Amino acid sequence: MNKRQTYVLSLFIGGALLALPALAQAGGTIKGKVTFSGKVPPPKEFAFKKFPNPDFCKQNPNKSPDGEIRLLKEVELGPGNGLKNAIVAVRDITDKKWMSQFQKGKKPAQKVIAKLCEFLPYTGVAVSKGYFYVENQDADPNDPKSKEGVLHNPHAFDVLGARSATEFNIGLAKKGDSLLKKVKLKMSRKGGVMRLQCDQHEFMQGWYLPVTNPYFVKVNDDGSFELKDVPAGKHKILAWHPVAGKLEKTVDVKDGATVEVNFEIK
Image (tube, rainbow, N blue to C red; front, side, top):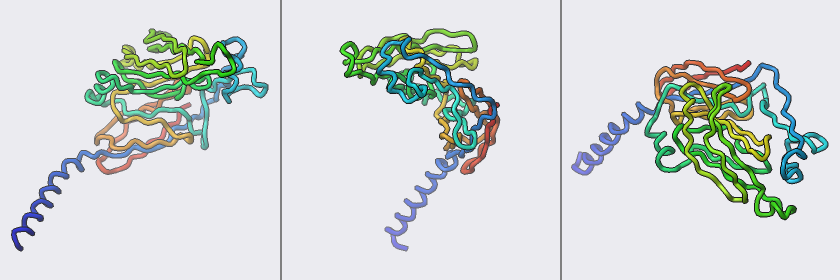
């Protein structure tokens, strides 16, 4: 073997050895499905005429057949009783480096838009002491008073049971107006969550689960989910829905392997 071949072989072996620790720390995959077997509550009803901009808000598809009532479907099921809008998250890992990007760099952990008098997404995540973003995308060209924007007033609460505390309460008057606010979420350590509601349009609501690591996912419409690159070890996994309920299980994750866990919320 000549010197050049020896050099190339050394580089290959050295590179392979350097790659070994990375492969060992690759983690595993958690997959499964979240279903709901309880009684689905009827949608909440709000008469459009009782709120500002009724004609514009009637463009939202979630309404009664006659178009006069806004329907807030808090619990929706997909194929096989899959629980739509559920969030699945690893609960026993606190990744301070990951959290810091939302706490110090003014990068929002969650982006929410107000569109057709609805907060989207209905469920998501938040980071305690991190930034949260809301943008108004509504304007009504048929209404001189709302041509530049339909006024929305995002009001965020830190919620634990019957207790709640305001995190921010800011009006967004024009289309394109946005807010970027840090939320403290002091009650998140005890299981509290973040709730968002428009003070102008009560039917505009959203819910956001505080997380402390990047191992979370919103389920597909059929309730299925997949969490990749979860560190090896035993972990507490939470399936959460703001109205249907929540369920926690412990799973044992192996490097390079896939473990299945299913949640039936009743």
